[in-house]
Image (cartoon, rainbow, N blue to C red; front, side):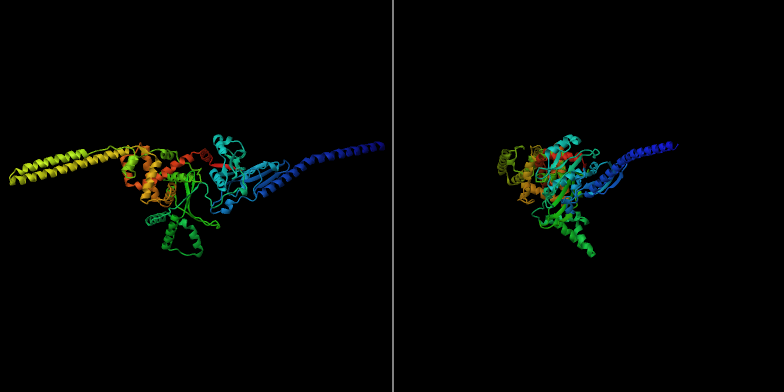
Length: 576
């Protein structure tokens, strides 16, 4: 019995040893994946947090060590560049610590951000993390890169316009100033939600412009070099009416700390002084796809200074609306003025109807001769020629013969009859003279009406030729500076239109009348009456139209048209 018990005990010990030897390693092997997942998850989580800290990103992270899943909640932003005047440091300096997470190329720049949502990602490895793309206005992004010095890539914009969202990833839209690096390119559509997806790159050494250069989409309008006293006073009064209290913001801010009450007279004097300064300082206007957005009277500081004296101006009378064409006329003329300089307003497109109007020959040359603007030697034959010399000679001979015969008959009469005959002859001659004067007046009136009608039907001249004669007429009467070229004169006119709402309305009303007769088949008597009464306004308006015509060639360039069309197709894009 004892042997049997010993055998049983030995077998039990052997089984326990076998279970220990085999089971413990198996148990350890079963726990190892859990330990590995835990360690790998914690390592990935640590790397993700380090990446988030480096990119200065605020995020909420959660980890599931069993399933080896890490959840990261990152905010989604809408961004826009900082104000060029008020936040110069943030605007011109790029970020010192841009995010290295894929999709975060937008952190290269300093942006004004606005949180618009949360994006949750479930990743296993740190390199799977993607930073949410941001929403940005396409025209603001392009303007910002242009302002820093980027150069548009003509091939890229043409390809984007033709293929849209099918544009190959990596296609270059903007290059560095030296043209060797890609500054803006097409990005993958992973996080775009149907939007155009872009990525950006920039180095501090690429920035070739500064706060003293003219921004893209902006036009600087020069003041008139010679201001007549009457003109200055009228412009000052007009600007006084248009000025708003916020235009004197800098002055108000300087007075607030002193808690001084400003009397109405002092306030009026300060507004008048600011209005007078505005007439002497350049005006910088900002344009978008919707026309004029803002205008500032900017007193440029010396290059060594870091401050600008900027005053916002009232521009409501020049904004585009559905009631009047004033905004379109001004934006088109200012765009033409900017297009002919080094700044090309790619985001505002001159309406096709205005371009077509500027290209057409709409002003009869006879009207300009009728108004005394051009000499008859400069125009082709358009009016009927009359030669009344022979008719006048025959009438004179006939009257002389009748008078001689009557006087011979009177000489043979007795004194009483002679006196009566002389009286009757003189009455008859007087009546005949009155009748001839009346007939001549009627004939001259008919001829003037015929000449007026023929002038309206005379050959139409090119807009540029009309403007050249009008400019000579304006210079002769010292209405514009005789030393300024046509384009410079237009710049001063646009400057005055910003400050003087009444003047701007008069110019735009004349342009409306002009375009109306061009669209209706030609000038009519009523239109000629308007020109006779307001020819100075018409002459000034013709300068704006010819500048629009001159800009059509540059405006129809392939790059500008492609860029404009792309900006219209995608108002908001994803940048990442």
